[in-house]
Length: 307
Image (cartoon, rainbow, N blue to C red):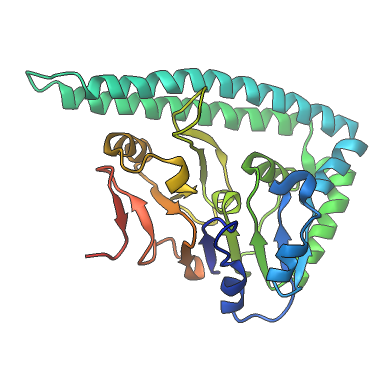
């Protein structure tokens, strides 16, 4: 079924018109758990959706689970601490590997070793990403063994309510906010979006629809400045890495940096989702439509279908 990824909605609001273009009658399930404590403050979004919004309230449901299920809460806290430590070590390794790419790229090569060194340096960055992905997958397995979400009566009760709402809705809207929190709530309730219902997602919500969620901010004042592989998403749009706010967060005019980013993820299309962007994947198609903006392997921004 159709999945539509949108740019940020703060300055250019397109979600209402996009949902209406689907020409569906009935309620729209809303996931805005990335808003965290503001999740219930959904009046404006509901108005944009013509009063048809049905908020799944995943963030508040997660807090309810953590309050009522001590065993699951303890496992979740342990997971958070271990993931934070894993990300800290990953950041150290990642930044060093990306810095090495820069160093070898700018080293004068008299005998043709330079390009080979760059290829090897980028492969080393991929190895660090792969190490992190493997460690994170193992961490998820270990915490699931200790506290399987589906074994929790509280989670089971909420899953029943969530499923009933989704069954009653004709489409799903997934908002932005904190992508870490959004992904956490989706995972706690093992949420799978119905394959037969269209999904409209923006910002963090768009990132959650992909297979690999990458965090990026070239203008970060401190800490790790390299783009970081953060987690896996729902995989509804395979082979795409969503990059919301690309103009604000990426040095798109730095060809070297963009080329390194693109070559780190050779099997994925880096898709820019700036204000006003509408990227439609009809009927489960994974092909980028004409007009979508991507970063190619040479570090240039390209428009799909442009001459």
